[in-house]
Image (cartoon, rainbow, N blue to C red; front, side):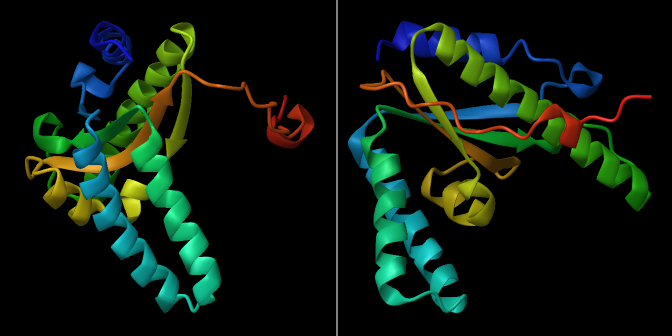
Length: 179
């Protein structure tokens, strides 16, 4: 995947709306195999520990961990989306601290959705996964991220060999209230 395409996708992502226009999103782009393998190995170890604590059968653990590793290492480009609270407002009370964190997270999510739409517009396939939320410290350490960069999501991007069928969606009647 050309660097110019990645730059265009990231540029488009950064035009997402954000709370207070603070733009709390941060992106880590992984293209080289060694970086992706290092991340996948560290995350796989954490994932395996979690599955063992959940008493998942060993054969199932092996399948799940291997799938996770392959998704990271085989994707041509992996982008980690982080939230950075360092420029968001600071409040003394828990209610507003929580709200500020949520709007920063929503802002970063907007950028992530914009990233996927931009990738699609470039003819790329994209998959969003939330696994960094379950291994934030590991991801931060392995990728040597600034302390304020909190990993929230991971995107696998590449040119698809096959376009998969759309997954079934809930009907509007179940998700919309009209008054």
